[in-house]
Image (cartoon, rainbow, N blue to C red; front, side, top):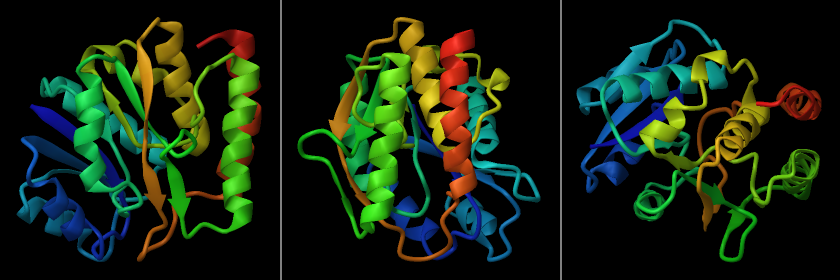
Length: 225
């Protein structure tokens, strides 16, 4: 059975649409909620999702680690990670899953032909492109989009990257997980997606997270994954 992991914080305006969009799939949704005050967790539970309530904002990466670990424990495979804010579109999930039949990790990519971004200002696009290029150059990775969080993993591959040992956040978390899989000789491919800016709620990303990635990436190269 497919597992889908999504972290949430005050996504009551988005989670019903996400759940409705995922209904055609034979999938178990795992929501890791960091203390939403708008009823997000209850809405997800009532719709049949497994909800892990953490009570406060503990970070995007640790939310993914918690949710992915739960998916592995449940024997779900493949395991999709995606945002709850509809920037990652439910209609794209089947394409990632199809690609995972012949690959260990599938990256939903904004920067390959057919991919793109809607409603982002130029500065954010530049930051994302720079982040991917920076990581690609320093780590010797052949992929175009290394900062995105829309991925489909084979459970064995995800289990093999030692999730509990990851301490990086945000962009750095996305880079580090792909790098670890690559160094483990995983077969990795990119599938084009259109990334749509969130319509409601607040972004979880910040300049602090982007700055963290700037020093985590060379640290990965020095010490290895």
